[in-house]
Length: 183
Image (tube, rainbow, N blue to C red; front, side):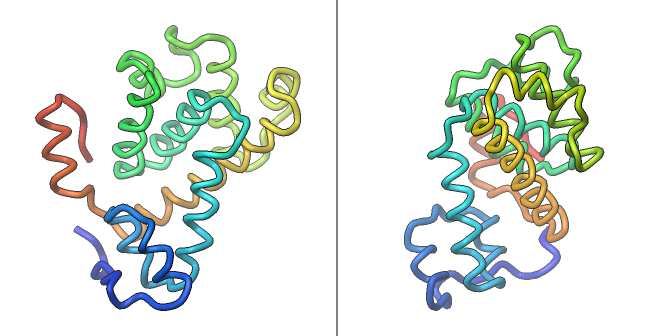
């Protein structure tokens, strides 16, 4: 149960009101409405990460899921497992993200992304052992996009957990009916 009441989007003003016109009715956005216009910047960066980067979407979702798992952010994991499945990630690959970089299901690039994500989440600065292989594989642009993605979803996970944002009831029920997980 959320630690503070969800914001009523109908009362939003300024850039937040404009942002709410484009957003799905997810609890993360309803909770963030108390922050006012920060909602706009938050959603713009999230949209950029999800839709306008050169980073392979499968690698992106592996990193996002891993951040959510390492952060204990059930809402984040729930939402991004759904996105990962839409991108074609198998249940076995999603389960492997829970196990860690050594899981057999990963190819080399996926394993490197997992190791780097673990390193950044645990140590803030990705060490040379995880950074260098991805620098060679991804190049500067995608490596920076990956690092920004990890950081953004660390922030998202901490927000979700600090405010105990609930998974939307209808989505959780639909997921259970489909055999998916929940918080």
